[in-house]
Length: 130
Image (cartoon, rainbow, N blue to C red; front, side):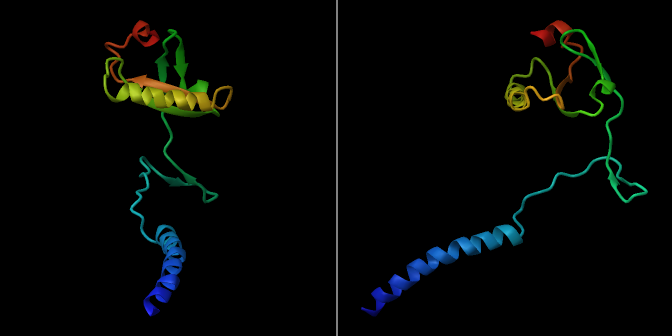
């Protein structure tokens, strides 16, 4: 009889305590998530702001045979990916994810997507267009 009454108390107590303990572990403990490293030089401005690495000036030819430079992207947010047209594995998956980003920001004048080929000898303008 005494065992049954302890079960009636212990089970709801465990149900209430488990989420609290779980939340404490997640919020205050080390959860093994790694932060991405900051690559490149980091400087501190005169105002105390952190200035991170910037992308050097670049120029590329797009699939429409039009020159695109970093000046075309001034004041814009851009997402860059790197691929090659004959890539059978990860590139199609990566391109589908870039398409999802494109769909999410369609109509926004602030976000640009860039995909750079890592095989320019093969990936001509006509290959990129296809």
